[in-house]
Every structure is written in structure tokens, then in C-alpha cells.
Length: 553
Image (tube, rainbow, N blue to C red):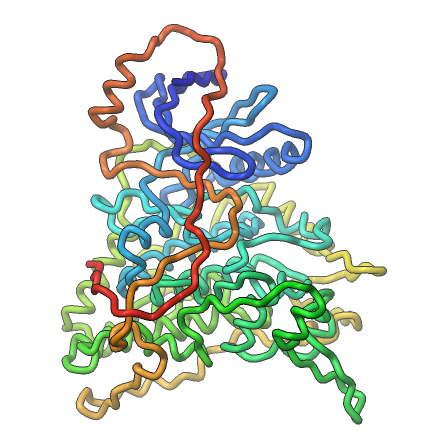
């Protein structure tokens, strides 16, 4: 059993939680306070040193705000030796992927998806204020605090791929975001901003509803192909501006001297790259609207409560569509999403205030905002960062006060943000300032967010028409369904911090026995022992079979 010693405290390593390419996460006992913590141990080599120092810099900036209200993991301290860096965090229970796996990848109820979504949006809103792009949002990086005590209360973790807005200029060919959650602008080689995180969140919401990834591409070509099958082709001017378009698309100039684009066929791509495209989707959707008809129980059509939940599902799909717009300039922002009717519950309150489902939805919303007891967080005395209050949706503006000097400096530097491209440098301004750039003509006069045109005319319940679900390989109606296996193609280090269902500040019987047997005298620093490598589930081929229903209440 290893002993790790920082400047101010000692940590006894209890168990290894997981391993990745660049390091591992261990569960440890903090002698100074008697608390259980998670320690992220990263290799201190030349290539990783700069990345680790950048992560520590961002964690310090995030630590200045209340981690409870902003839904970030609490960063305690860091230390290092010649071999490794050690980042100490609060110990959390399990990530969303582990939760889904434990429940057989059954769809998560819509009211619980809202609870998770609202908290992640709050975190993304705070990151935008801090001028930070997370750039690796996925189920593995969204942690459940304690599912027994605080249902679906979450925190965002792993800022190893994060960067400041003003540092985007140095990224020439970005390889960020896990493939399943990678935004089109990254896939195509377009200028990008913090809205790549909104795309990732939209994919996560859809995955929680479907029980499997929306776009589980085995390669970037498969990823682009899946997106185009469901959402259509990107705009022509975007493909003309993108640096990687010709890897996935063929271009032809018509008689009017206009560019005509089409995605390469499977045979064309395989012939050019010698890489065979694969089909790994469980649901092949022709539009995002079809999410409304997947995994929908028949009870939705037979009673009032079911119809209320189905309306809630449609509102959720509306928000997913706003998050998954191919043009990032039209993609919804975190603050606007927090005011969306799916998050605010305004529509349900107006039409179904006296239903049981609305009362449950309100309770779930309260569970997501309830403060967790246990760990005492210390924040800067001059910082007052808060998530929206219960009256947030009635207020037209919520102002943040006492912004940090570092934030202001970064925001000012955004005026000079640009993206390096082959043979030239484009001075890109992520927000419209009236400046015309011929290199990116299609991105100058972009459409700002507009109010949804969807009409909220609600008919009497007896006048509703039942949606058709069976034609999409319905999870509930198929006679040959089975809960699919799940896989993640990317094997990158996902910081799987976890803990048992017991309180984080207490040790179980086995842990207490281990701790009592430790020699608490000062020992020579030890970086740990060899352990079996952590492996993610193997890749799979999806097959639609009969599932055993696993409801999540």
C-alpha cells in the first residue's frame, strides 16, 4: 500500500479506480482530515508536462468559484515528483456511463434527463464566463455525486483537454473531443469556439434517451456520414471554408459555377484510405424528430399522465435540435438553453400543473439544486458566482458581479482570436463585429438565435393523434429486442473517479481495516504499485432484440 506525501498532508492509497494512457486514478485516505479523496496520477514526461500544467492552471481558476453551485468537481491540491504529477480531488460516486451500464443501458426518464441537463448547462454557462472551453464533455466526465442521497446530482470533471478562449489561436489541427461527441466544426476543420461543448451535451442527452450513442462512429468518416444521414449536408459555404472537407466529400462545379458537394460513398472512401467504414448504429434515424418515437412505452398513449410525459419528451427533442445545429453560429448558448421551456418547465406548468407528472418533475428539479452536505468548500472571498435562482426564468437579466481580473483580460484578448489555416492566417472573430472576411464569407452574416417557430397550440387530450413508433426499430415494440452491449471507441484517459454509496467522508469496514493496519509514521515517498490496466468495453455490433424492461425511478 503506497503512501503519497504533499507539502501539507499525507495520503494512503486504498485502491486503483481506473487506468488510462497517461496515468491512473486512485482512491486514497487523507490523513489530515480522515476523508476519502480521489488522486489523479499523471506521468511527468516532456510531452505531457505542458498539458498537465495547463490543466492545473484551469483548475485553479475554476476553484475560485463555488464548485457546489457551478457543478465542477472540487480541486483540493496538487504536488509532483520526478516521475508523476498528483492532482487531488473530492471523491465522487460514479460517472454517467457506469450508471447506464449498471442499469443495462435502459433509457433514463425524461424528468431525470432534465435534472442532469440543467446542471451541465449551469457548468457550461460558468465556463463561458471564465473564458474556458471544456472540449471533452461525455458521459464518463459527468459524475453522479451520491445517487442514494442526491438523485442525479452531478459534477463535471476532467479539464485535461480544456483551454482558454484566447489560446485557440495556437491550435492548427485540433484533435479534441471524444469521437462520439465531436462537433462538426472539429470534424471538418472549421474555426471553433465554446459551442463545441453544446454539441457534445446534445449528443449526451440523446444517448440518455436512446440508451446508446446517437452517432457511434468508428472513424471520422463514419461520424460525418451518420450526422449527414440524420441531419442532412452541411452548408456549401461551410464545406468550402473547411480544411478537411475533401477527406469526406466530393466537390463538383456546376454550370452556374457553384460548388456542388456530396459525401463520398463507402466504396470511394475505402478505396482512397484503405479503411472499411462500419455500421454501428442501433437506431438509424432520418431526422432528430424521430427520437420522440424511440423507446416510448405504449402507456404514453393511453392516459393523461403518459401524454404529459410525451409532451415533455417533445420539448426535450426541441432542445436537442437547437444544440445539434450543424452551423455553430446558430447553436443555442448555455444561458439561452437554461431558459428553454424544457428546462424551465413553463409549458408543463401552464398546461398540466395539477398532474402527478408535473409534481414529480418539480421534485426532480429541486433534487438537482439541493446542496450536498459533507465536504466544506473554500472559495475566494471576493467571488460571488451563483447558478440561477428559482426566479431566474421570470427575470429578464441576471447579472454577475465582481468578475475576476483574469476573466476580463481573457475576454479582451478574444478580439485578437484567430485560427491558423494552411498557407494563410484568418483573423476570425467568433462574434459578429461587422468586419468582413472574404475567406469565411459564409460565416460573417450568420443568423443569430431566434425564438422557436414551433407553435404551442395544445389541443384537448382526446383530439391528439398517436405518434407512430414501430417503424424505427422500436425498443418497446420489437419482438426480437435485447438491451445492446455498449462500447466507446476512444480509449483516452477518462478520469473515472468513483466511490461506494456510503458517505464520502466515511470509510467502509474493509477500508477502515486497511487504514488501521497502516504504519502512520512518515515513510519514504512511493508512487504506487503495478496494477492491471483499466479497459473499456470492447467494440460491438448492435442487434435489436427483446429487452427486459428496467425502469429507472
